[in-house]
Length: 179
Image (tube, rainbow, N blue to C red):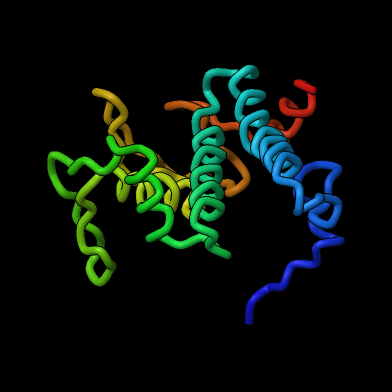
């Protein structure tokens, strides 16, 4: 069973429903799409960045969602798929199609068994990690610094840096204060 969207009830961007758009006007579609990308992905990322330089985790989540969204729009895919995301990243960002210096083994029974390029690393390590598991990896290397991510006692908090947690209500308050 698949969800069938109701165009008169589904938001395309804040204040504009799918049914409000003139889908026969290419300039209108481009303008509305630009607004959607800005309102749902770019502006929230900029807002978080203005509040603090320590919001890389939610900004990366937005970047992963934006990349996933663009891959679906680009290919006309009705839903998110691993192959669509990875192929889009390889094509649009050729540097991500380059092989990793060392392949990364994945848990037994998973496909593919190894991650061999940067596009796969972006998908499995970041897109899936951040959006599903709320972490990048159990042990991460960022630049020359290696650090272990440990789960917070509360599932309602985000790690901002190596030692500071921010609760979801605190994050909401800071975002609200920025408007």
